[in-house]
Length: 187
Image (cartoon, rainbow, N blue to C red):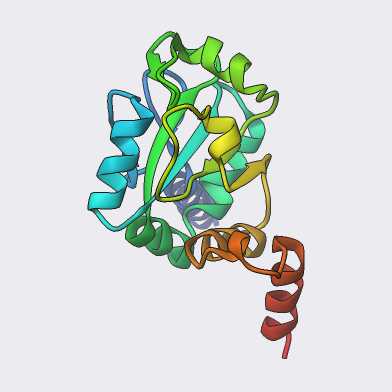
């Protein structure tokens, strides 16, 4: 009987560890689809465009329970991981970091100051960008969509699709698009 309980405990520990997201030296969660760049948004956008992908900037912080939720429960879903990998160029910004970020408007500030400039208060916050951004526009104004906080798999997946499909240029708001997709899935 003791062997059975030990085997169960090992199984549970192994299973739990498979869902734990990798955390870097900076305390932020790391995913294989994140890019390590110089955090020059104009350069990142150009590289995203060259790869045929959309630029997505994720603002996170050490110890963020909502970031953990996204990295352990939402992003690992096969359809979400595949969709991000195939369609997005992802740059991570540390809400309290000191690495310099160059905004589209050429402002250069440490991550923590850039996040203040953008008025971002919560983590995670994800900014999605169009293919073209004016050089006199700040990222927060250029974003075609912003996802502040942790959302379910279906909401996240729908937003990723809505941005790639340029739903922001159409007549169907994201909320209506998402409601329609939820309805389609329930049929």
